[in-house]
Amino acid sequence: MKQPALTSSELILNDDGSIYHLNLKPADIAETIITVGDPDRVEAVSKHFDALEVEVQKREFKTHTGTYKGKRITVISTGIGTDNIDIVLNELDALANIDFKTRRVKKDLTKLTIIRIGTSGAIQPTIPIDSFLVTETAIGFDNLLHFYGNISFTDSAFSEAFVQHTNWNAHKSTPYVVSADTELLKLFSSETDFLKGCTATNVGFYGPQGRVLRLQTEDNMLNDKLTSFQFQKKKITNLEMETSGIYGMATLLGHRAISLNAILANRCDQTFSKQPQKTVDLLIQKTLSILVA
Ligand SMILES: O=P(O)(O)O[C@H]1O[C@H](CO)[C@@H](O)[C@H]1O
Ligand SMILES: O=c1cc[nH]c(=O)[nH]1
Image 1 (cartoon, rainbow, N blue to C red):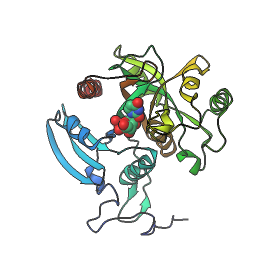
Image 2: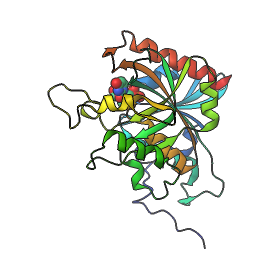
Image 3: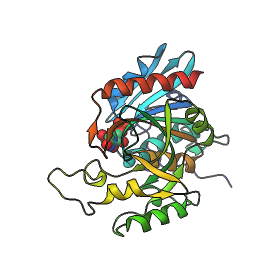
Image 4: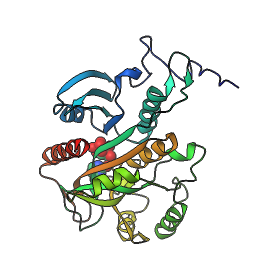
């Protein structure tokens, strides 16, 4: 039976035919997509391009598409948090895999390559500030993946061990554990510049990451528990706010994803980078050069 067309409340298109939040049309995106949190980081990537063909912004979602050494690349900002990742990953997938004229899923699906270039805080004393880390495994403290049907690919033994170790408060979402794309992980972790680690994605920058300014947190030992946790010799290495959502959604939608982290803070010795922009710029240049090697 022919699939029903997606209605106007589900696949929302703007008057110019672009998708609702990203404001992009299918031809506007490349198959290789770099995601960054900060809209200003889009230009920090695209300034290296040979040529720019698309420049679009709506809300925090800024997109540039162009070529770098002949390779077509899209760079898009997601803003902060896995709630935005739900929007960006679903709309990128719709741009690639839904026919906007018929409003039906295409027969032949396109697998996108998604590379996050983000900033992050280390949770192990041995991880230096201004280093680069590629995420092998992500543990999500956000709730995003639990809203989707089949998440049997998540590593429940890992999350159960984590819940037990931390005496995780049941009022918080159940942590879920997702993996990087194997080929992309090999590509980046074979570079000596990258440490390999397990990234914890959380729903906030302050309390959820154990930062106390004026408010105490529910568990003031949480970061220490993250540091001491180990599962099959894997330790949690760093904290940020998007990677688990990207890995989870990419797996569900059949895309491949990798998350690259510029380590700007070390939460164990309570230090912060003195050159954050330079470190992010170096990660951008390194990433681009690996993508065209
Ligand atoms: O630098 P980006 O990519 O935004 O990533 C990190 O920085 C933000 C918090 O400052 C969060 O989005 C976190 O994941
Ligand atoms: O500590 C940090 C640094 C960057 N981004 C985060 O989410 N946490």
